[in-house]
Amino acid sequence: MSTHVKTTINGQATEFLCDTHEPLSTVLRDRLNLTGTKEGCNTGDCGACSITLDNRLVCSCLVLGVEAAGRTIETVEGVAEADHLHPVQQALLEHAALQCGICTPGIVVAAKALLEKNPRPSEREVRYGLAGNLCRCTGYDKIIRAVLSAANQMTAE
Image (cartoon, rainbow, N blue to C red; front, side, top):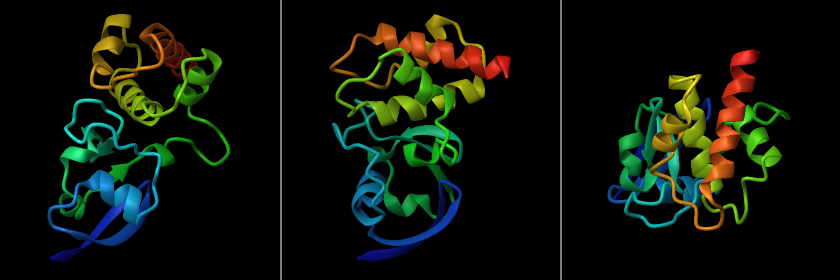
């Protein structure tokens, strides 16, 4: 049974149809073509599908599409502004903290969410804030350094 859902995604009013049992990650990728949200484990363990839902970091594979009704979603596609990368995205590039890209969207969304709540996190707080995002290609040190660098840049502005 399909349900009509009205929501806001990346600042845009959006409507879609989805089955009542369909995960939001599938809706984002397959129905709305927002393919930055990756499907990794589908059990909420890897963080590749991280989004914010009403400004709260969640794994979109654990949320049903119908639960998005009337809510505000931000995906990785909504992080950059126009032609300017978000400081987290820029820092990840500058620190060579990226490899295959499967985990990158979730890490970007999680890091942005962390810095919005805690603009000056310690290394420990960054590690804790990103603990739900698994990366199989890099060591986490470059990612952590990049997030701390982005925090420094954002608070200096």
